[in-house]
Each structure stands twice: as C-alpha cells, then as structure tokens.
Amino acid sequence: MKKLIFGTAGIPHSTDVDSSIEGIKQVKELGLECMELEFVRGVGVDEEMAAEIAKTAKENRIILSVHAPYFINFNSLEEKKVYASRRRLLQSARIGHLCGAVSIAFHPGFYMGKEKPVVYKVIKQEILQITEILKDEGNSILLRPEVTGKMTSFGDLGEVLRLSREIDNVLPCVDFAHLHARTGNYNSYDEFCSVLMFIEDELGKETLREMHIHVAGIQYGEKGERKHLNLKDSDLNYTDLLRAFKDYGVRGIVICESPNLEEDALLLQKKYKSLLRRKKKVTLN
Image 1 (cartoon, rainbow, N blue to C red):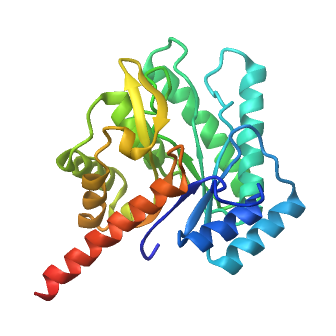
Image 2 (image 1 turned 180 degrees about the vertical axis):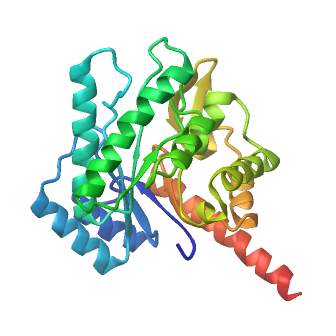
C-alpha cells in the first residue's frame, strides 16, 4: 500500500443504520479510510449483498478487511469442530473476496493442553489446506492468522510469523494490544521497534509495506487478555507505537478495536498525521 490508513473494527457507532453499506459511507464521512467487516459471530452476508458492499467500498475508496468468526479451533479434539472451523474460514474468505476485502484476520485455535510444536504442525496443515482450496478457486484474499491475547490461544508472535514464512498467501495480523496483554511487555518505543525489526527479518521489508494491524486499549492479567478498553483507559503506549510505525515506514491498515471504535480510530489517525507533519517540518529545516 502507498501509506498507513486507519479505520474501525465494524460499523461505526455513529452510523444511522446498522448495515455494512451505511457503515462504509460513515467511515468515509468521518475521514477514515478502512473498515473491517466483523463476521465474528458468523457470516451474515450473502453473495448479492457482498457485491453491493464491494461497489460501495470502491465508490467511497474505503479499503475493506474481514475478521472471521471466533468459533474457529483447528486444534480441537473433536473432528466435527475442526470441520466446522474449516467451513467458517472458507465461507469468510469467499464472501470477503466478493466484498473486495484485501485480507482476513482469524484466530487459528487453542493449545488444548498440547505441546506448542505439536499444535503448530496441526494448525499449519489446516491453514495450508485452506490456502490450496482458495487458490484452486481463484481467490487471492490474504489469510492473516492473528497474534492472540490469551496464553491458552495459539498465536504468539513467533508462531504467526513462522506460518507466514512457511505458507504462501499467508501474512500476519499483528494485534499490538494482544501482544502487550499476552506478554506484559511490548509497550515502549524500543520494544515496538523490535517487533517491526523481527517482522522484517523473518518476512522481508515488503511485509512492513502491507501490514494488517489491530490496536485497542486492553485490560490483562497473568493469563493475558481480559477485555478491550478505550485507549485513554488503558496503559497501551499508542503514541510510541505510532512513532515506531512512522520511523519504520509502515504501510497498510490499522483497525481500531476499542469499544468506542471511531473515536479511538480518529485519535490514532490524528496523532499519526501530526507525527508525519513534524517529521516533514524537521526535514525541511
């Protein structure tokens, strides 16, 4: 992408009518530039509606992404749940593609008491199978396994980057709130820079030019994430996070998952643009 853009995880609260089409229009009205279609409770969009969503997004120049249902666990002990997980991710990818979405974030599963290397092999094979099906269908949507916030969830930063390195058409969804909650760290400028350097080392500099990022305030404990908070009600050091994005030339989409959605999305966008203006002023001087 040409730049870093900001948007909401779902329909902005200020939207008059609760629909994705009106949500896209409201994102444009607010001055934001992207929106994530939230399929987290299920894919409630059919093919006809998907075409309308794609048309509206194109007309308003809004970049779309998708968040797949939460009910995905490729490491389930029950085969019927694994099968259902495959179906949910495929359905999300197919409808997301028709909507014109560029990528789809998803939580791959849980450790279920198993050793991490064992779980990694299981989940890698499942995602590989999904990518092959989508490739055969001519579906180019990027699959984005997400950095998760709970210690019981598969998806630490290393696991997500390794999947992205080893499987074609897979790239990370880096949730910085989840990363902070999962580790209790990664909340300073130097630590944010270390994450971006790690991504560059593992996947190449071009990956930093097409990032899919989640940001929110977060409440957490010893077991990781408890719930999302508004940025100003949390300890997430979003100013230094944005500064790291600027200094490393990060591009792509930043999806705000704070409860207040557009308020924090606009806060992040405003702060980031002020950092860019400051950099430009320093350069001119």
